[in-house]
Length: 62
Image (tube, rainbow, N blue to C red):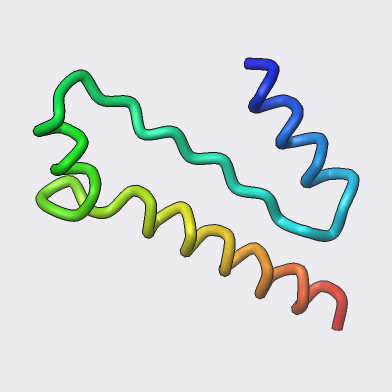
């Protein structure tokens, strides 16, 4: 999508990791599951990915 390409371009043009997570669900039950029950917390996983990218960039810059 255009949004995904734009966010990827921002990440490539800067030293700031930009994460893009979209939670697609058909029902409120699916949304609740993906927000912290059996399916894990997808928002937390996206945030953890951003932290890992920051740490990687710092390691590469050292």
